[in-house]
Length: 603
Ligand code: GTP
Ligand code: SPV
Ligand code: MN
Image (cartoon, rainbow, N blue to C red):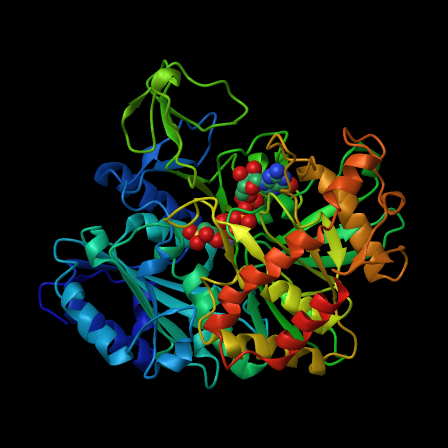
């Protein structure tokens, strides 16, 4: 540790220093990064308040009008740093085969050698925040501790919302045999230069090194880096699964409760679906949120699948969120929320408000856009970045599930896969069985969104919505999915949905959002063996009379249209799956080949 580093004495500091593994790693990182000051965070609301106050001075935060937005702050990230950067994300292992054909790979030694010089002295003149956190309820069998070292105040404040932070983490590490069981997460925003930006994962060392980005999944290392990439690697070894899935509860009028896990790619509707408000006709149903982005799932002693949400907050897409599309998200972001990269509006009294496209408020006469540039409705540009986000505590959610924090998790009745597809893929169908369901999940395609940098609207294969998040070889990942079935006495039923099919005029046919309840009802009834379905080449499908369409703007013939399967289009789909299959050449699990052949023979 350099003599010039001031370590702020605190309860957290003494707890960290009492763990020899933490102490040694901290010493190494402090020597490498040379921060002026080290602050140990405890994750309390008081501390978050202090971080916000500090951020007002540094320019990291703007305070919003506290009457309208109590405890809410605004943050703008660098305009070159507004989404995950998949091309700069690496799995770093001794052999390339461990990372597999869908990940960027660097040898672990090479990666350390490349990034060390970047970290050297990178925190001079800055503060290093030490963030101890737990992913999952601390008492859960799957709970995992991480410690993130970061020089970003924004990351420190955000992580205290998104994770269970503070003493709870030190307590888990203090349990016998746990002292070294933590993910070492080193983060520096560096000089936010995309040419010096790396998001590196070292699964063999339980380590994450992220440099040069302060945004979302690149920087809040508990989320995609730990809870998906590192966790999926651990899950494969320890017989559990880390998935890019929302988790929701649905209680029928007769009181029966079902839990559903759903994997949709980034910006394809997980948060919206997880907070769904049933339409009037479904007034007696109750939908509740366990999680909106990540599920960790395992098989219990009875051979049933259970799941927890490892997170404690939402990092949700803002544009399009309003009291019609997602009232529960609107309520969730009413207090103690960070808004990132939306538009900033100065009110008459000089305080700040926020705005975004399709919010409840009409566009302001003028604002500062997500880049801080003057904006008016005539500018012809978006005021909020399409990937602008809110960071809100889960406890703000009015429909938070009563078991969201239960270490025992919730039982999973059904698994849904989905994507954003304007053509070809019907609204809903059920797989014939688990293996067929895994094939469907493995071959889903989706049009790319603003959640990652790069072209938007291009169909790409996104197996299980996990393409950017599988922390090891996709071949082994698919085998793991097939293998999990063997551990279960009964398994969740698997479904595919597509809310995004369009008509000839380019309009969404299905009304979506709350009306997705109608599809959910059929799914739940199918999973409990109660609803009718007809066999089709793709899977089991509802007939129009099997889904409640009453009171919808679309009629039976529209429904038939969005359920149409065109053999020609499906053939094209199979051809476009080849891209993924070829990447896996020679390594494709045989179940995948058999399922494809069976599909072709059914057409
Ligand atoms: P990540 O946080 O990136 O993982 O995304 P997510 O899957 O949680 O996506 P989210 O729920 O935030 O939805 C993103 C976009 O999809 C929003 O702009 C919504 O307007 C749109 N969307 C969500 N549900 C529906 C739906 O049922 N129909 C239609 N047409 N659009 C939807
Ligand atoms: C996603 O892109 O799937 C997200 C947002 O949930 S981020 O945390 O930035 O990855
Ligand atoms: Mn996500």
